[in-house]
Amino acid sequence: MKRPLFLVLFSLLFATTPVTAKTLSKVAAIVNDEIITTLQLDQAVIDDLTKNPQNQFNVTQFDQMKVQILDKLIDEKLSEQQTKRLGLQVSDEELDSAIADVQSKNGLTHEALTQALATQGVTMLEYREKVRGEILHYKLLGREVNRKVLVTSNEVRNYFNQHIEEYTSEEKVSLNRIGYEIPIGDEKQTAKLHKRVEACRNQLISGDDFDQVLADQGDSATGGDMGTLLESDLAKPVLIAIAGLTPGEVSEPLEINGQLYLFQVTGRSFDTDTLFEQVKGKIEEKLRREKTDIRFKEWQQELHDNAHIEVRI
Image (cartoon, helix red, strand yellow):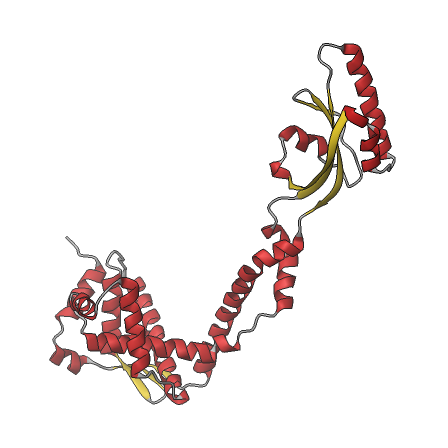
């Protein structure tokens, strides 16, 4: 039975002895005054296959993967060279603090961390160098990328204004309410009540002061300012009754649970200022990520443009 290509290549790479590997190692790429060997490239391929053992490739796909990994090695080499040019360093104190932080977050003692690394075939010295490299990388990005990314308050506000529908899930409505108790079993009194309610409604539509109209109803009615509410919090019959009404307009009389109501819309809005305060942090972070991605690509291109890169494979 044929084995998948990547397994064959993987086995061959692992079967290569150090002496043979040294003999066969050639230049894969030249980056300024440093080289990347085919041995380094092969090891990087092995590492990638080890991390993703489920991946299977045909010959073309494998070659494409190898090119991508070489591109990554070139980028890493350019970053290392820029780190040296800038004189960035990591002190032992910084390194110790970073490792102590790893131990603390994972609840590990120094001995437990050393043992955990050993099970992965990694020595503490190798791990320290790996962490040192990561800290240097973050320092480099902080200086060359993050420090040059600025998101202004105007940009945040403009984005909010242009995408407000993404942050506004529900509209708010301000209401006044007048309610009347419906007489039980007295059609004549009920008819009179409907006439009274209609007359009250006409007064409100005409622009009469709500508080005065309510006071004129005497003890026969209750009501007042309901404040500003989310429409989703309203009972469905009320929501239907006020649908489409603009500030100042009054609903048709609405019967609910033995009461006859009028609802006057006094305002419709989503409180944009409050909403902006709630979401501006997320917007700023979003814009910062987008700008950082753009700046990172620009920075990588700048490194490539200013470097001598020669691919030999």
